[in-house]
Amino acid sequence: MKMAGKAIPLIFTPHLGPLNRGILATVYIPLEPAADAPSAGTVKPPAEERTEKEKTLREWYAGFYRDEPFVRILPWGLNAATGRVRQSNFCDISVHLDQTGHTLIIESVIDNMVKGAAGQAVQNMNILCGFEETLGLSAPPALF
Image 1 (cartoon, helix red, strand yellow):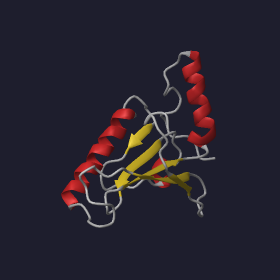
Image 2 (spheres, rainbow, N blue to C red):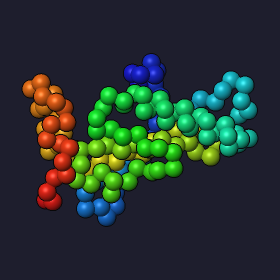
Image 3 (cartoon, one colour):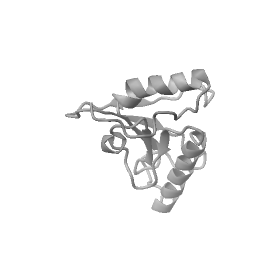
């Protein structure tokens, strides 16, 4: 993991369900406990501590993707859902912590027919040709 400067263990789970379009993936990343924290599993952190940690992580993700017009970091309380990205070039990402506060859970969704293929090709062409990156991708497409 290039950004962290070291290998980070993670679990990537693509979900298969009765979806007519869209891809939902969940990534689980174990976080290192603070040096002064008790060992994982012995004590749950207070809800306020976990909420603050989750908020900080969400803000970090929002900052990282702030210049990406088609990536939306969802606010607290919303889970990524394929219905919100249907017929769009958006990738929605939700950021959560498990109950212990030691596992980061990232959910991401795309419409595999737009963002996954055609829309991504148009976005790449726009960038390569020097056009506005969002050109032709903001209006809802006709159903296909």
